[in-house]
Image (cartoon, rainbow, N blue to C red):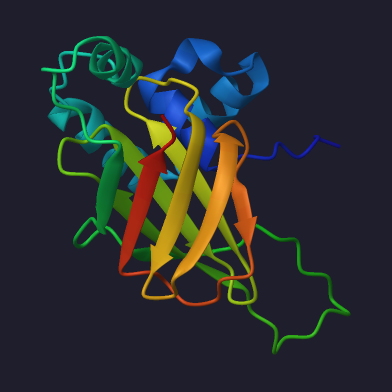
Length: 180
């Protein structure tokens, strides 16, 4: 019997942007499966379109040290058009399971104007998970994330784990603000 490999948005992101940071079993699984084809195409498109010359952390450090260097501490992330899709959960359904229960996940992608930040908002209907990525695979630290129009704000120490929320409706805008 083969062990089930758990794949999440972080794994898909790293598979395209930083494959050397994936474990061997996940790398092999994603290389040989095409069930995440849509997600892979999207991440490949983003990778090809990103043209940032300075890493996000470098921009923050420059702004701290050089007052003339303009760097906003607040970023507005807007939904990426036509990339929303629904994905059925990869769940084993047993014969005794209720046929009426279907679980689908709504995924919405958000980008800031300069494509420094990417957020994947996964809505499971009764809760949501939020994956926050830097386009340079940096660990982002000490920031607030606000979902609009819900007007719900969270303070995070870093982006190493997805944010789990009780938000049940997709936001129209996400603001990320870094502490000084």
